[in-house]
Image (tube, rainbow, N blue to C red; front, side, top):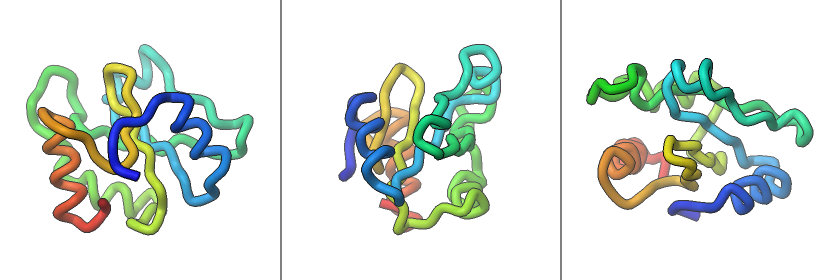
Length: 111
């Protein structure tokens, strides 16, 4: 599945699919001030890899794809990306910064 999913759909996929993983791509500042999702009740950990390392700066993490691999993920996994603005993304999204995010993953063979 590629597209925006609801939190309920993301949770259900994480419970039912052992290959499903949640990757929180918000900034470290957001992790520290807002917190990170807790998946301990289903025996999974959230993977923390920032897409834009610094809030308010337009550059993206140049090592994002490599960081996914370093976290033990591969294109065979079903990755749900947690993005700002209360959206979860299964594989890709339509436009803006999310579109650039999706395009990079697609060029790298992840979606």
